[in-house]
Image (cartoon, rainbow, N blue to C red; front, side, top):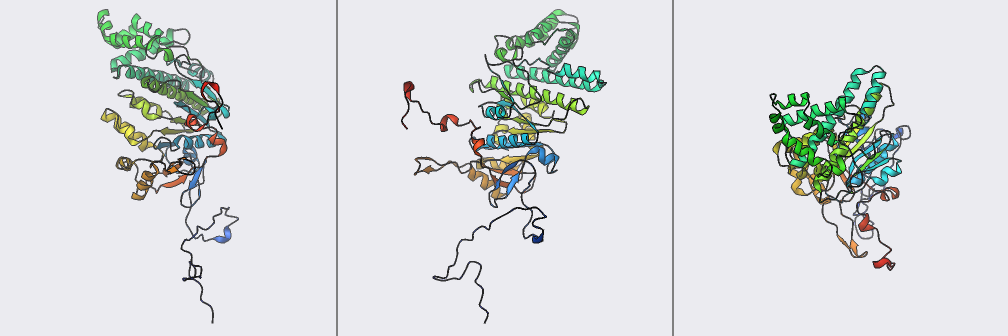
Length: 494
């Protein structure tokens, strides 16, 4: 008689070896040539394998590769080369962005970190052979009226017979400078400049470009407004009366005085640029020297860094379009997005203008904030709606641990199942106490993310840092590094 086969978990009963736990079978990967004999496959397709290795699937252990440029350009998985990061502080958002930035640099993509507030990215950019630009009082200045490389690029384009492209570069530089001036005034006055004031500023910038020798600064702009050339008087609608012109421009003149040397932002934005940005290597704008208590200056520094970075990217793309330079792809990181948006009403329009400038192929964008409430806490309803559009336009979203109160708002933008909501809520729980080590264990959501593309099911992944990556991270360095010196320079006991 043929013996009966044991059931899947073994023979039931004492001493018969039944297993109550079913072990996960080992998993291997191979090419279609190597595993062709296993067809038809027993399970469906796994996680995408195009792009930067990001992490392993929490349930299956399969590797997930993802980044906005590879998924847009090579895999055709998303319609916009951008990613939006959400998650509570301390769970690894910066680490995840750095993983993408370092991985993309291996593909030849140039990382641009336009505003590092802690700082986190300085070591990474330095080891990539990049450029560190420091902004802050008595640290470094960024002239908001500096057109950068736009005039030289326009001259190269005209010499090569590309007059239309030259005018486009100059128009973009003019728009970026006007946008930055309006942002400074908005933060300073807590109200946006009027349409007439913006027209006067635009005419004044054009006048400086045509008549001023060298690179102008804000005091030069103030002199032009006070001199009242015909172009500005026409924009002010002074009706031929000098007194009326002075009345129209009084508030604008007061704002420019406050933005000048000795003013609220003059030490950083009313002086010649300390270090021009290069377009052929990784760059980070270090604004960590600006204290958190000076929220207005920090927000304006972030906006200025974004404006300067996008200006350089635009010039590089236009020169590459006409064949004067090789094509360079950029990965732009906009961290601490909420800090800039909350600095004043109407600043969402300024950020929206910048983020829409990556119109040419080859520029990936990563926007980072903590929670949806950061975007919904803006004072004006129209600003809140536009800020929500940043998430809606993103190619895909990466979520870390989030409180359950965030789920209704997040679900209105991204379709989340009940299981996905519970997963994100569990990741934001506080860490437990490790009695053996005498300290807190790592938070349950540390390094765990849910990758969402449209309405598709999310991919839960666990990001584990390599030793080289751990040496780059500085967010908690003052807490995790143990000092060897005690008080008064004495060596601490070991």
